[in-house]
Image 1 (cartoon, rainbow, N blue to C red):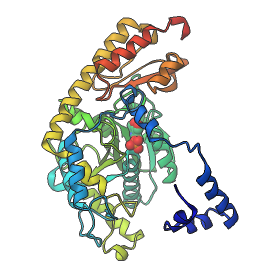
Image 2 (image 1 turned 180 degrees about the vertical axis):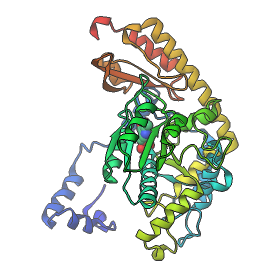
Image 3 (image 1 turned 90 degrees about the horizontal axis):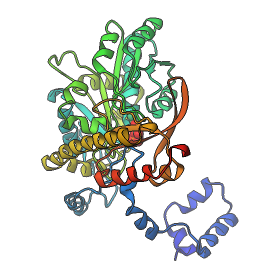
Length: 441
Ligand SMILES: Cc1ncc(COP(=O)(O)O)c(C=O)c1O
């Protein structure tokens, strides 16, 4: 039991009380409450029970498979080496010697090189790091684009994206103090390159920070990189790709070149400037993390500017990242997912995931066409449809949204077919859908 004496023995407890505005009396009330409470709402037993149902989660883009035993062996090896047992810290640029030797920059560098290769970044022109999440990687991409464009032109860019982009883009746009230019969409939900062309022409005095989404959150649409680049010709621009989910699996399919390769035949004319991918989505890394990858050239241009606002003296170099302290455990753990055997498994998962998506789509079209099932394109693992009964939404943790389709605003839900959503789970879902009469829609 947590006694008052033991609690106060923990470092920082007194400071917590002061900063939270507690008086000594109210603190002692709080502690006594904790000591005597018999109904503390925390139960590992409940979590273990819930974990048995994890494969039923179909509404959000997270891979609920437990990584193979080899991953946990790797984790134990890291622990044995001290990583994760005391305050390791990846502060700074992983490509620079760190003032703190207790880091895993070596693993971080290698992961970025290996994944950079999958996205066809030229080996000698790759820079990146492991971030906290897809959102964190988007933040770095947008900040880098904003900084570079402002320096090149003397004018703050406007942020161009569609209403199908992830909501975090709007938050980041606010944080960066940028004006938005919403670009219209094609019927599938992807960015309309002709509308982009028009919007660029309407805003000639501002550079364009374009955020394209490779796999929009709700519909799974893909913004077409080459058509966007065509529209951007002649404008001062920076193109960041938010490939939080699709960026994980498309490199393992025959479609990688079409959508995701950063350089095609001409390395001097890269197709985009930076990319964000979440590690906990397709890869199944068991805690939130993200890949952020750009070119060394871009990074160098950014870093020169960054050094003017960030005094590097304290850590001996310009960190290159917005956050100072960074997790050292995640890059070392995520390294496992860049090994050849883990990549083989990712390739298998990518293939079976798309096959399962075809299965779900065909079954829904055949049996539940009244739900108007839609798959934006053949590369998508997302099927959206009219919202079914609430108990189905709850059982499968489905995300729901109001969409305006054919001039009618109605509520929709989607299934994101992640690697754990196998035939058995999808069959159970389809059986449940069959229990619902059309009139209960
Ligand atoms: C397209 C897209 N971008 C960004 C994010 C946010 O990623 P994260 O949850 O890793 O921050 C999501 C999450 O679903 C997403 O779908």
